[in-house]
Structures are given as structure tokens and as C-alpha cells.
Length: 398
Image (cartoon, rainbow, N blue to C red; front, side):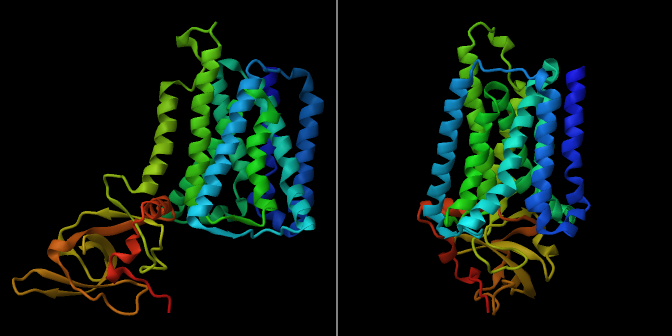
């Protein structure tokens, strides 16, 4: 009971540290908050953990060597995929200051906090109620995920259904999955091991002069899939080595938890690849910008072609490919059928060819920003450039 109280006290202290950001009081201090106040706050959390709770620390090193190796390989795989995506999608200059002074300053803003965070995570997961360890692991993961969210933008995350969807897919879900993975690793191998995976990808963001030009959608999928499959293998190896434990007593997230994690990662990948039965379509050009941009996924709903109105964005087939454009005018054909005159919002002129009823295939009701970029990357890998196939889908920026 005492250990649980200690953990709750720590959690209150940690969550209290983000109040300044949520209330935006931290903006009063400017850069001093990022480079002085915030690191010192986490230093206080680390000292409090070490001084007041060190006697209760439980060391669990039974599988440390094996888990260390798996985490190291996982980190290398992450870097390999990350930079291969750079060769596919190109590289861009690092937006951060890569001078010696800039690197040192940026490292100070997050390295001490990260090291202390992993030490606190190690204490919490190894001293919680073991009968409810899965619930504690989820609580710890959610807590640390909250500390990683950009609280300055918290208002923009919940302005409408699209921003809420984007927030969960791009930010919250990947962060929770990574923190669940780090919490699991911390239980079996300690805080130094979790630091390997948590620290190295962050270091390259501040040190390398150029970085792969990948989208947030791609990073979201990468940051979710890599730790998830690493967890599965790690769990398999631990259970395989622990031959004294009956198979039915293996410590896992359970069947429901396993399916939930598979579903989350699978949904994210399916959103990016456009595989839902509700017919999401990946946008391959900026002809509808700024409302709908390249890399967005739009959700297509069925509608009676006779009820389509001017101003609606429709999906129709042209030259064997689908186009997403807005209806500018509706005409009547010789036999009374509907003929749509369409135009991309970002195009100078209306589309070259009118759209007949037989080409119509639904209306657009919502979009999910960015998550279609993995499909565009796959198209490039397969040498199928959708943008050049449909003449009417060209977007102009002038």
C-alpha cells in the first residue's frame, strides 16, 4: 500500500509540472521556461524519487541481457527504416540549430528530462501492485504521454472532429504505444535500457544537419509499429526463457489487450493505405488545396446522384482513376441525366471533361489529414505515379 501511495505522489508531482503549459503561464517566462525552469523541475522530480523512494527500489534483472539486445536491434531497425524513407522521399535541412552552441542548448532542453523520466518510470513500474501491473503500466504510459504533448497547442487539438481525429492518430496513439513499450522494457531491463530507445532517435533530431523528409503520418506509423512488434518478440523470448512458468501463466497483456494493440496499429496502417470498406481515398495532388491537400485521406459516402448539389465535393472516375473535385455547375443531358461541371479549388479553370452520372461514385464528407502519405510512398516504390495519370487533377498554385 505504501508503495502505491509513493507512486501516486510521484504521479501528482509529474502531472503538476505540466500545469504551467496547460494554463500557458509558462509563456510569460519565454525561453527561460524551456531551458531553465522545465529542466530544473524534472531535476527536482529525479532528486525526490532518488532520495525519498530509493529504499523501496526493486531490481528485476533476470532478462536484462536478452532485452538489452532486442532493444538495441529495435533501435537500429528504426534508424534503418527512417533513413531508407529519406532516400525514397528525399532529405531536408534540419530546422534546428546544428551549431555546437545550438546542439548543446537543445540537448540540455530534453536530455536531463528524458533520463529522469526513464528513472522515474523504472521506479514506478517495479514498485507498483503486481496483481494490477497491467493497469499500472497503462496509467504510467498515459501519464508520460501527457508530458510529451505540446500543451501550447492543446486548444487546437479539439476544435472539431477532424482535429480530434488527427490528434489521436498523429500524436496521442503513437505516444501511448511508445510509452507502453518503454514501461514494459523498464520492468524487465531497467531505465538505462529504455534510455537507448527513447534517447537515440531524439538525438538525431538535434545533431544531424539533414533529416529524412518524412511526414508526421509516416512517423506516426513508424513510431507505433516498431515498438509494437518489438514488444511481441520481446514477450515471446521472455516466455520462452522462463521455462519454470506454465504457459497459461505467462505475463502478457492478455488476449483482449493483444487484439486491442493489433487493432490500433492495424487501423493506423489501414488509414494510411486506404483499405477501409467505407472507401477512404488518398489524395495524390494539391488540386483541391487548401481544403484538401496531397497526402490527406478523404472519406467517401454514398449518395443518390440525383440529390447532388452545386458546391459538394464528389468522387468520380476519369481515365480509369478516381478524381476528387467540387461541383461548380449541374446540367441536364439529352436523356435527362445529370452532367456535372467540376473544378479543383486550386485549379485556374474548370475541368476539361464534364462528368456523367455513370462516372459518379459518392460525395466527400470528411477528411483525415496526412495519413495517406504512406500510400503515396508505396506508389513511388512501385513506380506508379498517380498524379500524372489524370489530366484534370492537376493543381495550380498561381
